Image (cartoon, rainbow, N blue to C red; front, side):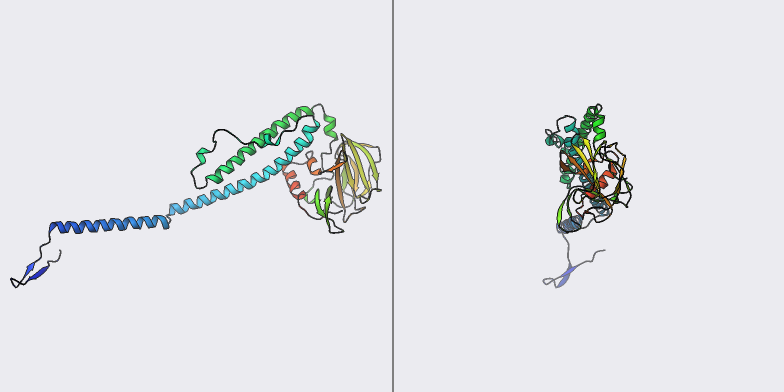
Length: 323
C-alpha cells in the first residue's frame, strides 16, 4: 500500500492530504517505462557488439577451421601444380616434339574461364575473396589436367608405331629404387665437395654401397667404357639414338664392352668411387643433341607418381654434390 502524503496549509493551520492527479501519475509511469525500454535497448546493443554468445563463439571457431582448410587446400594445389608443370614440360619438350605433334601453347594450358561470372554466388561473404580465388585455382587446375590427359591420349596413339623410340629413351633409374635416400644431389647449382665453391652440377648423384648394380636406362649401344675422361673415373656411355646419350660415372668395374648392344634394364656395371669422387655413388647424366639435360624428366618408366614427387623434392635441394 502506497504511503499517504500531507502538506501544511498555513491558512487553515492544519495538515491536508496531497491528492495525486491521474495525469501526473500516467506521466510518471510513461517516463519510467520509456527509461526502462531505452536502458534495455542499450544493454542489448552493447551485449550484442561486445559479448559473444555461445553460438557466436561456435560459429567463429567454425569459420577459423574453414579458413585453415582453405589454406591447406591451396598448399596442396601448389604441390599438384608443381608436379603437373613438370609433366607438361616433358609433354611439350619430349613427347609431342619427338612424335611430331605441335606443343600445346602455355596460354591454352592455363587459360581461365571468360564470359559469365561463375562465382557470383560466392560473393558477399566475409571470406569471399579467399573462397573465390581458391575455386578459380581449382577450376584452372582441373582444366589443365583435362588438357594434359587429352594430350597424353594423343601421344599414346602416336606412340603405337614408335615402340623402338620409346624403348631407346633413357626412362628408368640406373640403380634400384629401394629408397629415396639414394638420391643425394640433383641437376643444378650445388656446392663442390672439394673446393666448396657453388657451381653447376650437370647430373644426378645416387649414393649406394660399392658394388651396387647399375642398369642401362634405355636400349642402345655402348660407345665408351673407360677411364680417360677427366673427373669421371671408370665410366660408361650409351648411345640410345634419336640424339640421346646416357653417362654412368665413378664405376667400380664394367659389365659391358664397347660396341655392345644393351637393352633397358641390362646390368652394365657396379657402383664405385673412381675419378673425382668423394664417396661411393653413381653420377648419372643424359645428353640430348650433345647438350646436358636434367635426368629428373626421364624416370616415368619405373617410378610411381608418389615416388616421383619425392624424388623431385629431393632433387630440388641445393646441397653438396659428391663429385
